[in-house]
Length: 74
Image (cartoon, rainbow, N blue to C red; front, top):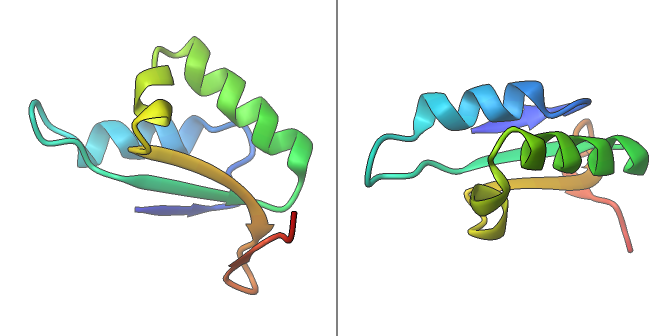
């Protein structure tokens, strides 16, 4: 599932719970063009107990422009 404009990470967390079931994790990617909001999202997801999902790449928050469909150059 894709969340364009991830902001605080709230919808990414909700989507993760919606697409995952016990023993069968789903994948959610959030894209946000403001780097500080990406950091904010990641910290919020960790506080919500989703650090392992981030580590296992079940959730990924990236800096990029969803309107252009690509990652920002780093």
